[in-house]
Length: 509
Ligand SMILES: Nc1nc2[nH]cnc2c(=O)[nH]1
Ligand SMILES: [Zn+2]
Image 1 (tube, rainbow, N blue to C red):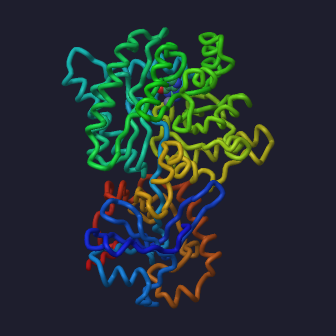
Image 2 (cartoon, helix red, strand yellow):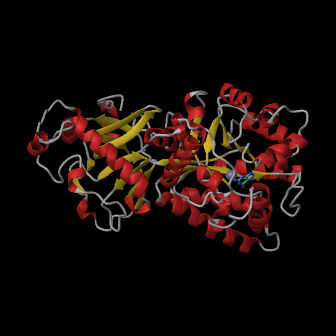
Image 3 (spheres, rainbow, N blue to C red):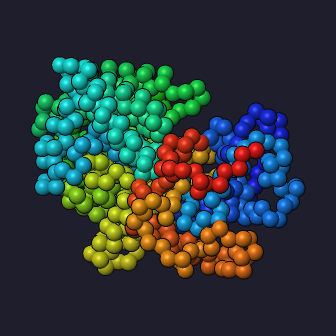
């Protein structure tokens, strides 16, 4: 955390109620930096904004001039204290930059074929179910069941923001945005655009239908958000070049400019797909050039997969400041390949984030994707015999949080614990009910329910941080949704798995 503490303007004090969270905070302010702060207070106002951070707070050393004491004297606030619980820590909410909400029922299905067959055999038929024109009611019910489940599941896994693909259907896409708001997850809503599906003609739209649908969705979402808050936003989503006409690609590039909307698509996932793009766009030098030619590459473009990029494509992607969404689980499940992410991050300096890519990916948890991206990078390193290809815990955590925030154009609003950012946060408990994580007392960074004197006598700050780092490894490699016990989005508690609050020490003033 860059700032030790900061005090809000006194004039605002009577209008704002606060929650102060006290405990261990862990985040990655930059790619190479992992910050572990014990005994830290983060103050969140009623707009869900962090405007108070105080590190190393010791309640036994009262200093009446300290910002904390100032708060205690002057304000109504809730004080939520986990500072004496070594297996509990706060991390930023995860950001999933590539997930197909509509494909959720297909999780675990379709292991037998590569991308283009997988699309035709499994994916297009399922997405087509959302377009049922015979009965609007049954279509909406079908969509509501699936979409509610995917939002609940991802929130329960600590995803506070996601960039979603839905289907070509506008009505159920609008319903999806409404559900996001109801459940309280921040979301980018991408109606899939595709007006040229040669291999599965049943699932396609005309250019004109796509324009009408996009306009309907943009208008609907414009009116949906609460005042002064953008929680759901449309994202322009050409599915991928092979299913879009040039007219559609041009139109979508223009639409992004005229409405200042982000873009997401797929790129260079599978070798047969790349050949198809060469055949369909012989005038373009490579896959990235197809998108570039149609004004679809910019700083708010998320390119999913990006496994087989050429050096030249990597250069364009960097020049245009696009982000990549790395989807290692999907890339393994449908055997698309191993993206050289370490090179993208450190040689090309491209921003890389993580995506579950449900249902090419079989796990809707970004914690699982963190684990998988590290494992895939180790396999790549064994193949290339280059240790530098291995991703670290820091790299993966950064991609899951601040890298994701940059990908969705919210680097200054979410992704870390910093003044002025939204409180999109998870509380992790390694000893939660039914936890799969085994922790021994000697592995803890400090004693449970210690007195401050005991604590001072124990480990140095560096030793404590090292132990906490090891606990992070335990969380990533043997933890799961059971350890994500609370989730806040925009300051609002949206998941609470703590059955009784007796293990939270609440002090109401
Ligand atoms: N993984 C994946 N790749 C795609 N390329 C085009 N559409 C898709 C999709 O739905 N999933
Ligand atoms: Zn995808």
